[in-house]
Length: 497
Image (cartoon, rainbow, N blue to C red; front, side):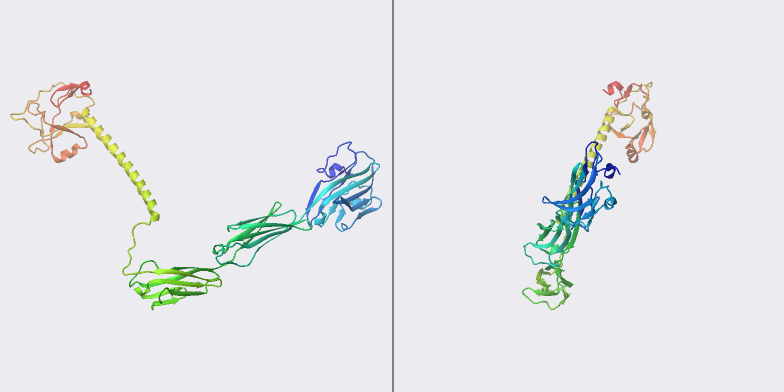
């Protein structure tokens, strides 16, 4: 005999000294039409015990009903209405052997009426009766369907809501939940009905106000049954009266313009079958030709064609009209070059941003120029001989002669860092001596004549306008001395103070 713990290890745990027990699952479930096993195992920890009979019973409203009986001497008996659907799983039970420790039964083709509690009872000697119970739940998968209230929905401009689709989850156990998934604006109603066999039918209607915008829109019903989701969808077919517009007049119909036309466009379901044109407070011009939904004005435009044109479109649902006022001008209108107002704001914003960027760039440029100007001016007054030269002009001589320049010391030397001072300088002379050189004589030249400073780069302009004299290098000056315009010499220390 197999050990009980090996027969159903997950259903129970055998403890030594626990006595005789009946091991069963507490809960079992299955769907209608399916098969399920109800286990029943007798555990005997203190042999010897004699099993005289095993009885399966169904409990309904505290009333017990025999289902199947196994007796070692009399064999197996299955009672109606379970006779064709219940069997013992173990072959030893059917062979009338004393081995009745496992009396598991198999339920086939489950019915909703099988949903109940079942007792497995062992009759033993000398221990007496031992029993246990299992609750069997039988589920019924619902029948789900979705349908349109009508194959076509008619929209006549009313504001009353109407049911356009119905979703049903019928005869389900447990109860289903219905939801809707759609872009249509509407509302859903839900109704639950309990059936005599224990199932529930759920019905949900979706209500909307019909309009042309709903045509060909999708409506989906979602049924949630336990952990499953069942979906069905339909596409709405909405019929509506024509929605009429007239195109072709561009606001620029002028005298002698050639071959203009008006077109009547109608959005309708079903399609428009009849178009009719009228001219309000008048008759159609003689040069008008009607073709289907268009008016063709043959030849040049005249004042006769001005007026309010009406297009009447008809389908099986109804008739709707559209109108267009046509004005005739003597001359063609000139299209405005001004940007549309809708684009004015973005362009203005871009212009403001551009102005700000340009302004910042100009300020930065002005700051750089000011810095360069001040820097050059500072170098001029501080005597930076590496970048500046003294260029003597024509000057203004006093009457009676030129004051003598005091002789310069012969032993003075240029500073080592003033090599540019030792080079001959180009100056502007009088008398048109271009490119001539002469010795600088301190006794005959007027050192008090006005002078100015220019940059090395700018001195090229002066060379082009007037050819300057080349002076011989001045006498060398001591390293710590600087020559002044009046002929005097001061120290570098005094110059930079």
